[in-house]
Length: 91
Image (tube, rainbow, N blue to C red; front, side, top):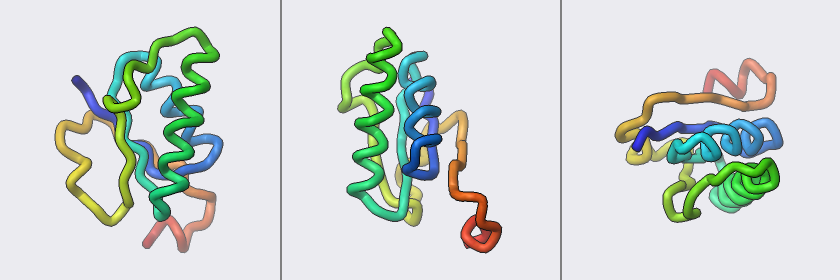
C-alpha cells in the first residue's frame, strides 16, 4: 500500500489527509506534538467519512514526530502544511 506523509497538524493538513486516506492511501501525520498529530489524523478521517469516502481502518494510518525518520518507509508523497513562516520551515 502506498504511503503519504503529511507534515503539519492544522486544518490544511487534516483536509489533505482526508483526500489521500479516502483514495486508499495509508497516511502518516507528522508534527511537533504527538497529541496534535493524533487529533489531526482523527479530524481528517472524520472528514473523509463525511465526504462519503472510505479511509479504511484507523490502524492503517499513523502519527509521529517530525524528528523520527522511521515513518518514511515506502512513502510516495510528502506534503508540508507548515505555517508560512520561512524561519520555521528552515528548521
